[in-house]
Image 1 (spheres, rainbow, N blue to C red):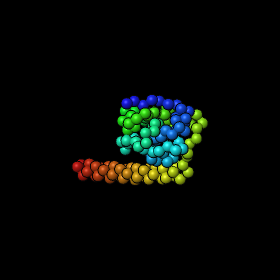
Image 2 (image 1 turned 30 degrees about the horizontal axis):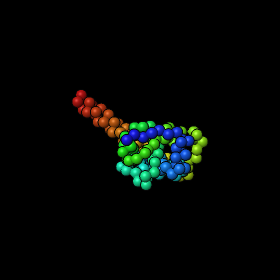
Image 3 (image 1 turned 90 degrees about the vertical axis):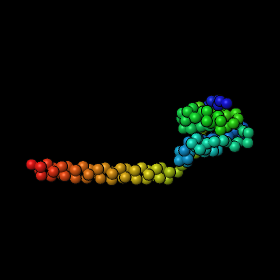
Length: 146
């Protein structure tokens, strides 16, 4: 079974007729920005989609992930399925509505990045101290040998 590609306008028409819109991105991506009415089912955990025999439209951010996982998505759909050409970016480009998360989602992501940078800098500091101690030890050893 293969999936057909649809434009954003065609996808909107299908959704208005009852098609199910599945966002295969990670939950944090879906939380930041999504198409109204889309259901989040990350591709990593996607096995089967229960859509009461409705057509299914899969999308990601740019269309790349849906292309990469097309075979897996076709099996998961088990029926007539579609891929949104260009993903969420094409949807926005056509001026169709999206839901954007409040700023707190960005704050949480920034906090996570700060923790990573802090951990890295602490590790870097430890490495610098280790190199300094090693140099001191090797200098002492070379003086001792003389």
